[in-house]
Image (cartoon, rainbow, N blue to C red; front, side):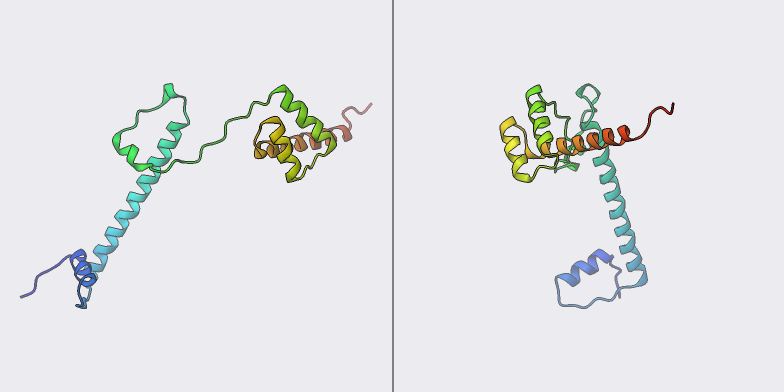
Length: 149
């Protein structure tokens, strides 16, 4: 007299006992279906996280209230895009002066400048990258003739 057991029962019994178990094609296919369901669940979670992230970036007046299930999906905070830094006139003046002296400052120079003008070194680095791009654009536009008379 044989009883049929599910793949879960067999794998559970095998993991906790010294018996060896053989699997039928039917039980292996059932395990494949279970893993496919797990993959589908992962896709649903990813889509939900994406949807939550989109709602978080909207103004609070447009935010969709979170349900209790959404709150459990995203347990780790997602990386948000940095807000645009609004430089003061003093900060801009100091960075422009530094740019005139050295358009490619080393790390120490950027750190010292950042401390003086109360910014992070990464904000100063990005400002210099953008300023060099502007500088190159101005240089290339002045080389090309604008009018052929």
